[in-house]
Image (cartoon, rainbow, N blue to C red; front, side, top):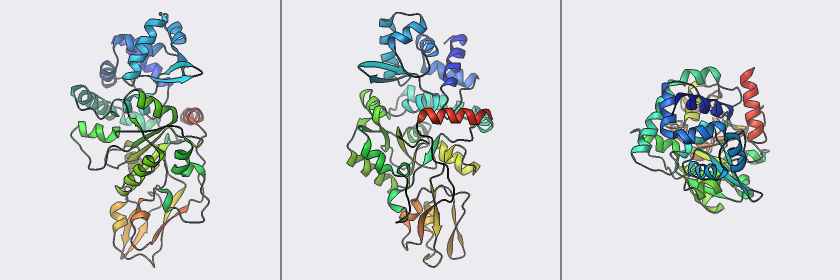
Length: 358
């Protein structure tokens, strides 16, 4: 793409927010050149904020509606825009870079020359912008951890937004896709032994993913089975930091998930919110088997003599240690203070941008 087109596209992506800023530099220019053609980049840079019809986008771009409609459909197939049907009209939206465009490039699980190139280009960009992300990250995290539901101590008040089963019950569509983080790592020569077919999307997102080949629709029963399989494999449930509804559930490993890695490295939990729970250790029940120490992805548990001891600054409340304890010495208890998540994605983005400007 021409540099002028790239710069306008970067500005457009910056306005979309997300968990990773669009930062000018040779790495980002190279990435955009691989993702977008000149025509696609030009159109994307002219798209209104939020969803819009092909006619509205054509008007903003000064082009014919028919030409724009065909191009938008091709871009949706590539995961460069998101489409949805509302009131009998198809509307399109330019997503952020992350989460959004990045994930779509790897959700199909494809292995070819283009996906390998994209994997390396994204990796180059992630490395080049690490310091910028550290400096500009929003105090309000984009994602949050949701605990293993069945491991919450009986009798504890559990809010609906801490229960994955509630989101599954009330959604109309669920789709499963390849884990983009682990597939990205595999394309870079860093494979993971955890299952990859465990990423879930909900509602309109699931419908879009299934229609465009980014996933397949599944039943609610299969979704629950996927959660169980993920827990057995030691994967952490992560989702958007919203409460009314969620678009996705990522089942994350510490070796490839950027959210978990930054939470572990920084201890500030600025990239992901902890769950409303924290592990509690019953020293009298603990038999010193060290199973929880090995299973915890955050190094929040360590042996103090013959008894496991919790580091509260590291515990994210995922519950994986509780489910593996043979002596039932561990339990999830409610944290003393935790702020409820924003209601929806719009509120989340508004609060993230406001907290960054302070």
